Length: 147
Ligand code: DQA
Image (cartoon, rainbow, N blue to C red; front, side):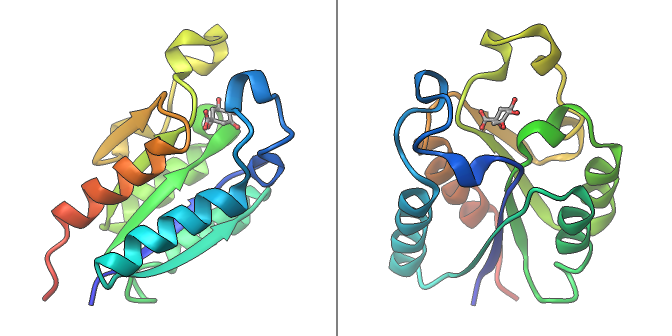
């Protein structure tokens, strides 16, 4: 059985009302429903977490192997650009990690152009709104082999 952890970083709980010109009107609840429906079709166990706290995200990643996850789909949100701790947790976890963003970070402010996460992720999908998540989940599922 494939088991995937989805992590939404800070402020993504506000989707729907947060800067709709950038992120659209889709809520996090909707994104999670879409991911669950996608996972159900493939008989995948999906555990979804949202946190505004860096240390909590580090713990989720650090415990993912022990908790029998084979892959992590993560939108690190603002921590993409700032968090060496999240980057190091990903580098250490030994799991397939796919980074996703709703927006194209390279078409935005310059401070968003640097991702500390991309060099340690298997790959990054961005710029497709909520669709970035479903593309990311498909990519992880293609890569994971169930032992
Ligand atoms: C984001 C892009 C980040 O720069 C920003 O801080 C976010 C959301 C995205 O999904 O487009 O919170 O990760």
